[in-house]
Length: 119
Image (cartoon, rainbow, N blue to C red):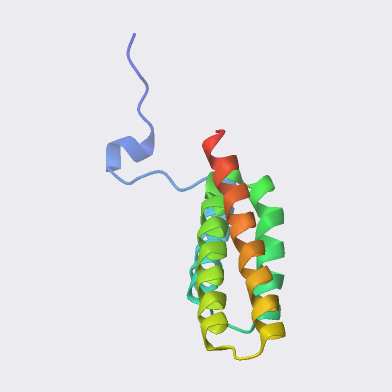
């Protein structure tokens, strides 16, 4: 039984991406860029939280993007940034608030680590 060649096979030109694949590639580029910016601490905290919330909804919808890995790395990076703020703080109340925030981000990172390990 011989395989039937398509026009693309004879010309050596790769087939055009399927419409769904093209849409996913566009979205993947957006997601990758946002995760990189989150990990780098771009924008203010409120904007980072908005991006984080959106990415969390996308993580369930598009598991093939590995968004959970990016979010885990973001939480660790944010905890590291907050730890630096903690070291610079002089008031006990501010240190307490920052310490709780560090713990919260590390807890979220650990949750994503557990999710990734269970797959």
